[in-house]
Image 1 (spheres, rainbow, N blue to C red):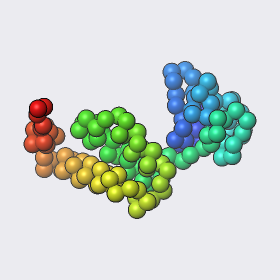
Image 2: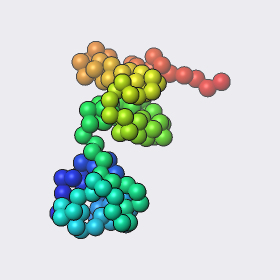
Image 3: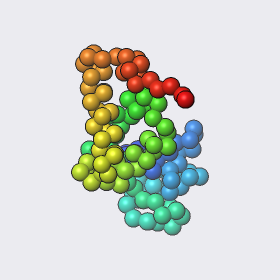
Image 4: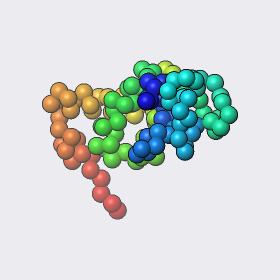
Length: 132
């Protein structure tokens, strides 16, 4: 049984039948999975990773805009950088300006799409670029 702590951790990675994370890429020890031992402090073999709560408001904002970023074909590497910025920084005001602009723009697009004010394909058509 997996604890809610593991499910809420930013480092959690489930690879098929193996419940793993950045701390324990070969499998999370049962004592942690069962909740017998928390992982808020470093323990032997955790590769320097500990529990990191993914439920911050900033991270929740990132999760909400992820579908828009994917629809706009934002590079995976850029999305990873933004996700990391949203986990390292606890507050929107702590983000670099370019990350703030990206989040605000994606939120505005998501709002317009949700209201039916615009269609994604129309936005893509308006911003289409051509190769030289």
